[in-house]
Image 1 (tube, rainbow, N blue to C red):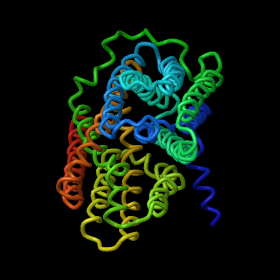
Image 2: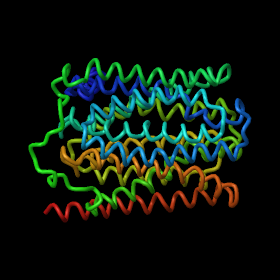
Image 3: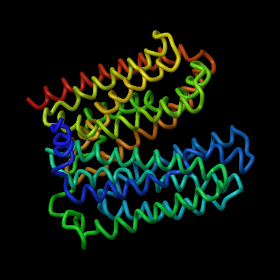
Length: 405
């Protein structure tokens, strides 16, 4: 059994100190993520707005996230990933606190939009930073380490947020804001150009501007973005329609649902870095993605063809978890592989936008389909979309390999 510690040591070794610092910044930032998961409850329970108005606020957040992805990508290429990350964390943290003071509906909508723009402008800069602090041999692992920080932070923030929300909703905004600002201060302390040699002091201007190809003229990448929207549409059902199906369709208790959902994060935390370490040198990113998407299709198919209650949820979660580990880290790697230092922010921004678009349309249309036609019909639609997405990734792999010959 001595080989087990060695595998984990190898999986986590070889990453630059800057990568570890960046992951710690992300962990602190995501540990304070308490407002977004409880925004609908805050609007309906604390401010006494109806569910329709609360839903509109979340839709506005999604629209702001789309704008933030576009804007963050362009600004990252112009001003550098460090400056955009620092500004997004500081301004976003301040905006969380400001939003918590708003009670008028129009003011809440405006502040929510501005907050989402600031919040999501961080993501393209963060993806660009990971690429800067990594190399081709360990880049996928660096993205996996970042995902690990996000998952751990989200789990901690959601758990603590639920406890705090039961006592004082307004405190959520202060904690979310202060953790953002705290993450910004840590970023400045350990990853500023003056303190870390891996962080560029200024944007390089030695190469002509046209050396950075636009992602909007990269047809293969645009196809990848479309496939990402389709994939993330299915994935976001896990946080909206699936928990409702567990409660209504499978008759699980809230405690059982929480335990099932926790299995996903626990397996990812234990397994993903080792799995990526074993696979990343094979240079088959798109092949791994297509297999992962097929496993997610199989997870949703399980709901319609396997009888049972808790066992169905567990089996489906296992398929989803393995599919997620095979797809998401390698999607990041493929995205970065299309870039250079002059256009990396725009590519990462468009990738962020793809997820934001799915975050807007996925939960809304998924719940509408389930409400009108039932969960069985919804799951068949998700299975069909996932299979089509997997085929699309295989076609993209064929196209990329043909072009590279």
